[in-house]
Image 1 (cartoon, rainbow, N blue to C red):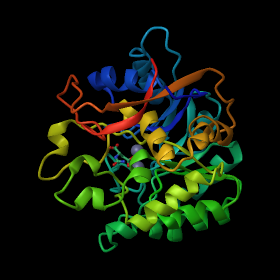
Image 2 (tube, protein in one colour):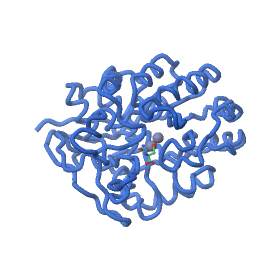
Image 3 (cartoon, rainbow, N blue to C red):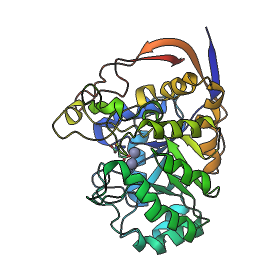
Image 4 (cartoon, rainbow, N blue to C red):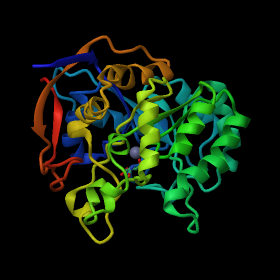
Length: 344
Ligand SMILES: NC(=O)N[C@@H](CC(=O)O)C(=O)O
Ligand SMILES: [Zn+2]
Ligand SMILES: [Zn+2]
């Protein structure tokens, strides 16, 4: 049996939610990944260091015994965020950075930012203290086509931010377009991007052809195949600017399979195997280790993990549903097969 050993991976973009859902989401990620960036889009959003540390404590209660898991908390940037809060975040090892959600762009983003320009003093403080800015990069103007929203956000906001704050560490999260790849490649080494399994493995045909597939619906929305190919080439290039961030985003089945379904793919139950599937499809499994376990830590100036995980070449099928305290969930890739499996 073929096997592949890589350093333990980290997930640089993850939604765990809160309350009883943590009983499902925390073990699913903690048994695979050592560190994860925990996104703050709860209701109400996690805007302060105190709230983030309380949330982190609730997460730690659900970590299975003997498992070493280090959730790194992102704070939710709002119009009320102050430079003092940036300094406070910088001083706390459990806080990784601030997350910019344009108001209305995605799940639980209503409290997000309405004017990126008004953030100048906060961005200046982040640059000064070395606190990374994590970005959901989509404009929200109703007259901008959903497939263009990432490109317009880059042109309108990200290029000006990187020009104004060249030393600000910036992660463009869950990139979906050739425009995002170009932006990240052309920017200096303070700019990087996370990539999800769904945006590497799928394009909008997988969402819309032969029936609408709500479990492939996430934001930013899957784009046309040429954009998918640009993402694939970036991941396969071995550039340290592109690394793993699943954006695993659980929503119960009833909230996905409905007339107005929620955005988000719950990929955690097969996360590392999905990336292995992508790299193996392109005969590039040798690129998995740095993408999953190296470049993200390097970018955040954290040590690489020293323990390892083993994947074995063995076909298996992702479960149709996962039971949770609030109802069943349909994981991403449900009922479909994968060629590599994490050895437990
Ligand atoms: N990606 C998604 O489609 N959904 C995420 C939010 C986000 O990361 O934009 C969620 O929290 O459900
Ligand atoms: Zn997002
Ligand atoms: Zn997300």
